Length: 208
Image 1 (cartoon, helix red, strand yellow):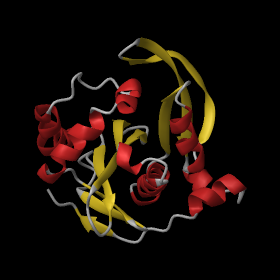
Image 2 (image 1 turned 30 degrees about the vertical axis):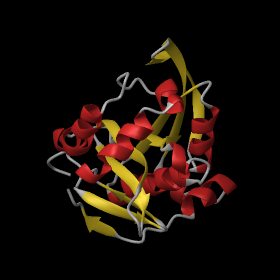
Image 3 (image 1 turned 90 degrees about the vertical axis):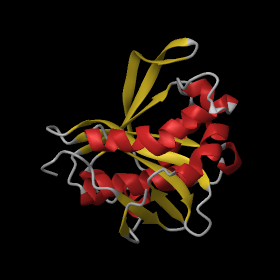
């Protein structure tokens, strides 16, 4: 990691693939990011246009990796490659080896466990394969679904960060979660085991 950028890879996680965004994802990204629930919790452009989606899929997501800020994956089925959601890392502190995970699930793929599986896979990749010390997640105090994903993915709730985030309606409090190498390989508690269930099935060169 001497260049302080994450490698351009795809990650296989069971029946899911985490891969770089591509132009084929533009229409699905536009539809997902225009969804009312997605817009409620994420300060995305309103309206979220086809131009916004094109910029994200073909330029912005890749530029963020190249800048060292993080890395962003499209979540797809391992077979059909249809966009199901996204998971990614941002605000990476390369000196402290800490990065923040974020995700959204497309309306047509909700309640299927993909956000949990993708977050767990990304946590293992970050901590085991990239040698990081900590992965953080911040969710709005009222966003119960996102907090449930964090817990099921093996992250630990640490507390509330007051007035630390914002949505289209104003400032909000955020719940802070974290995952460390000890959580993956430590005490053998139920939480540890839920995270250790993920086994990497392959790391492949990323495809633009």
